Each structure stands twice: as C-alpha cells, then as structure tokens.
Figure 1 (cartoon, helix red, strand yellow):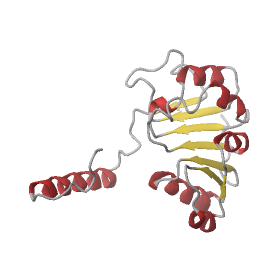
Figure 2 (cartoon, rainbow, N blue to C red; figure 1 turned 180 degrees about the horizontal axis):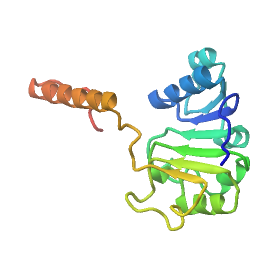
Figure 3 (cartoon, one colour; figure 1 turned 90 degrees about the vertical axis):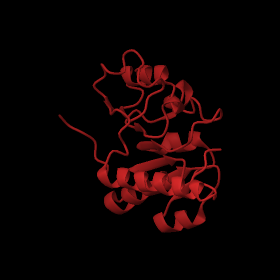
Figure 4 (cartoon, rainbow, N blue to C red; figure 1 turned 60 degrees about the horizontal axis):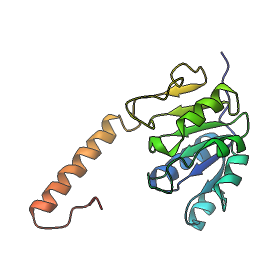
Length: 182
C-alpha cells in the first residue's frame, strides 16, 4: 500500500474564498506546496503571501496541478465544471478533491476517468445526487468517499451554532441577519 506525497507538489485551488484560501495556507505552510489558483478575480495579496500563481483559466490549472481542490458555489455556470473534457486535461498522476458541492463534478465522467486511470484518484465529501452515488463510484479503489462531513468537528459545529443563534437574535431585534440567504 503506497500513497503519493503531498509535500512539494503543485496544488491547484479552484475558488479562492475563505475555505480555498485556508486550504492554500495549510498546503503552503505545512507541506511547502506550490500554489496555483483560479478564481473569478485575481488576488495579489494572496499571491504575495503564498507565492501563488494566478491562472487565467481553469484548463491551464488542471494541466499543471498534482492536486486539484474545488471550492466554488453551485451555480448554473459551475454545474459540471469538471467534466469529461476537463478530466482529460489533468495529469494521469493527479488527484481531484471536492468538498464544495457535488454537481460541480460530472460523476459519470469521473467514474470513467478513475476506472481508466485518466487521473490517479479522487476524494469526495459531496456527491452529485446526494445521498445516492453514481453507479461504480463506491467500488473504485482509487477514490475516498466521505458522507458530507468536512465540517464535522466540535469546534466548527460550535461556531456554526453560535452563528445561527446570532442570526436569530439579529432578526428578533429587527436587524438584518448576519448571513442572509439571497
């Protein structure tokens, strides 16, 4: 049983929000990873802090990254963002990680890519048709599946509970909620 090193690898972050930035922080500071990223806007402060390189399009990032970590919201423009064509751009030694939203990846195309060694592996905490899995996905030896538990730590759940309570208090006091759903 042999795995792949994460140290000194190229980590591609797609979606540089709060979570994507935190993943980059740990990859850079903890593993000396080279950080490349794609986002709808360039972040020069982030680039300086992590010696990161902005990619003007996702395809260039996919061609270069050893690990691709997805951190985008589910929108019509991001549904199946990772599809058969984009999986084919990735290196055969690359790993795909999705903790954002399941339908960001075309799971049928992913199963095909994993079965045919187009990419080396994947780690998914979210699924296209939760709670159901695409046929064949659970039988693969080169995928790690977790049941949408990326935030399942005591500290994170305490923060989530506190934030929910603060939103309730704000609304009851006639103010805007801290995190309105739009």
